[in-house]
Every structure is written in structure tokens, then in C-alpha cells.
Length: 146
Image (cartoon, rainbow, N blue to C red; front, side):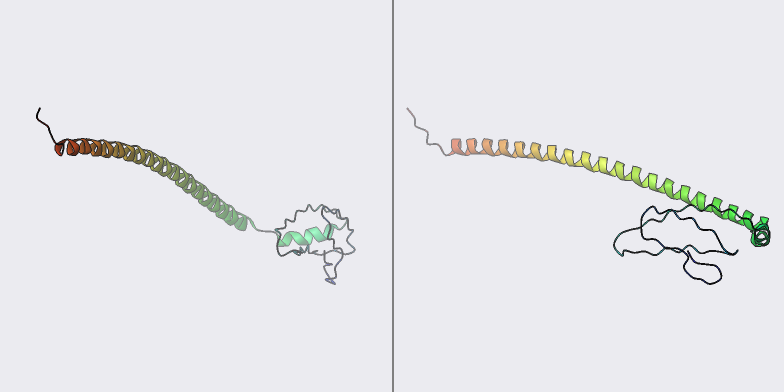
């Protein structure tokens, strides 16, 4: 955490789950900075900030920098547009999943039919070959007249 006027580091930690309590010596905006310590692992930063102030004037001055009603309405419109686009994406994803399942089912059915058709062809060709061999053998037999 950096001090608002001197930009000096007030506190830093490398351990997981650290609790930190700091009493501000002066008013202003304090910066919370996070630095990734590993290039390989994905890291998550989570924090909660609770503030208490004995400085009434600071928050009154900060009220002038708050968003106006028109800006809030614009954000509401933008957030509803984003929500609609997310719903559209989810609908498209559901459609793609359903379509993929239908195609997989169709492909499995086709494969099973092809297997049975191939087995039927093998049986038919084998039986025709046996019949042809029987007739060829019978044709070239020497018949003895008794």
C-alpha cells in the first residue's frame, strides 16, 4: 500500500491470508498495488477494505467527484446491453451444444448401420462364393456312366 502524498510503501507482504490494519496519518487516496511474484502460476488476489473516518470534510469533498445521475443511467444502459449480449452468447452456446449432441447421435447411428451393412455384405459374398465353388466343382466332375 502506498501513501497518498509521498508515494512511499506503507505496507507489503508475501504471505497468503495476511491481515493488515493501518491507521491513516493523512487524508487522500491510498493505492493498493498487487505484484505477480511467479510467472508460471496463476494468482488470485482477494481483499476487503473497511474504512472508518474521523475526517468529515474529506468525504464531503469527495462527493463532488461522484458520478452524476446521467452517468449512472448510462452505466445502467451499458450493463443491461452487456447482460443481453451475455444471454445471447449463452443461448448460442446452448444451441451449439445441442447441435453437437444431435450430430454425434447421428454419426453413431450411421456408424452402427454401416457396421451391420458390412457384416451383411460379408455374409452374402461368402455364401455366393461357396455356392459358386459348389457349382464349379460339380461342372468339372467326371461323370461315370454305369
